[in-house]
Length: 99
Image (tube, rainbow, N blue to C red; front, side, top):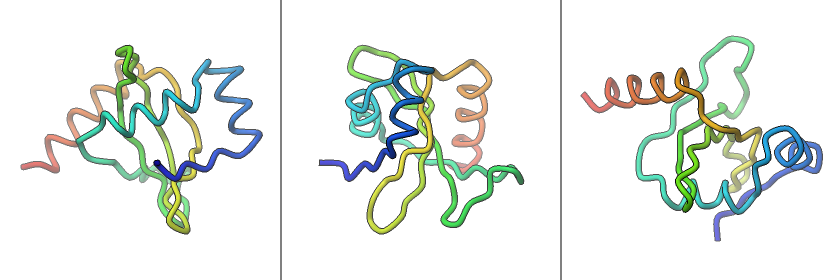
């Protein structure tokens, strides 16, 4: 089982604003075999670092999943439908890192 931690306010935002269920986030992690990217934007810097990826649910929904590794757990910060800019950035940066 993936050790996900989702605080009550984040869970409410995921469900109400983004219509994302915890099960979909888990599916994205299980289906993901690529890299995680660190969010290096100044106003998003955290300790430990915030990382993200684009993942697919079993139904093919593409989500941008944003999280922090802390104390052996994955703390979800947000997850929502991946827009074209996020997909493009993820593809470009993972290709650059793979070179």
